[in-house]
Every structure is written in C-alpha cells, then in structure tokens.
Image (cartoon, rainbow, N blue to C red; front, side, top):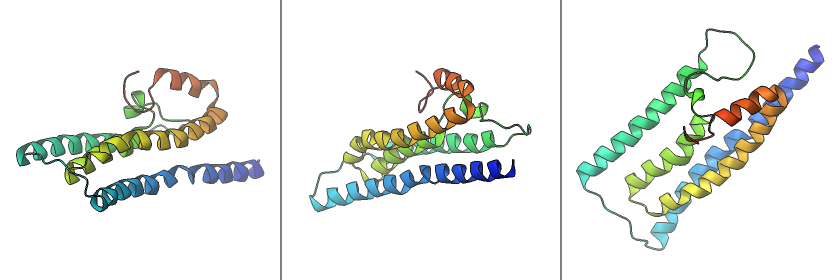
Length: 161
C-alpha cells in the first residue's frame, strides 16, 4: 500500500510539472509579439485615457474576481478525496487558464495598444487546450465516470456552452 502511494505521488508530480510549462511560453509569446511589432514598426492603436482606464479597470477587476474566487474555491472545510466542483468550479473547469488565455492578452493589448495581441488569443487557446486535454485525460483516469459527467455539465473556459 505504501508503495502504491509513493507511485501515485510520483505520477502526480510528473503530471503537475506539465501544466506550469504553459505559463512561461504564454508570457514569451506576448513578449515576442510586442518585440515583433517594434521591429517591424507595426502601428498600434491609441485609446482615449478615460476609456483606457475604464476598460482596463473593468477587465482587471473581472480577472481579480476570478482569481480570488478560484483561491477561495480551493479552501474546503470538507476533507474529501476528489476534485473540486464547488465555487467557481461549478461554472468553469479551468478558471486560471481562462485568466491566462483571455484576460492577460486583453490587458496587455490595452496597455501596449497592440492589435496583434488580440490575434494571439487563438494561439494561446490552442496551446492551453493541448495542456488541459492531457490534464483532463489524467483526471478521467483517476475519477472515471464522475469526472466525465462533470466535463459534460461544466464548460472548460467560459461559463456557458
């Protein structure tokens, strides 16, 4: 039994080490896109300061709410073995990835006035989708039909299907 626990722990570490690799790559894509715009002198958009502040504040506020709701959803008084289906996880299976794919790109686009960062969203989505599909296959292997039912009822990134 102890051996199985150690093996399962090693599998978890191997699995969990894959997902964080997407974050540096995502940030690199944003950086590379901004450098590409500078190098080729690609026109950036300008937005009225008032509109910039309103849009930036609203998107940042939404991102902060999602982030803190995700953190609060991790805290559970029940010590059960399983996956979290409460809090924000009732609406979205991957709230942190939603922040990384959509909110970070939009906030960076507003900050730098970059048209290209909007076009980066489908690339980021594809990158994170590959990572998440592997994660979900792993979770189906652990939780079986219960996780399959959860996946059929709860959207991956956006709270509607």
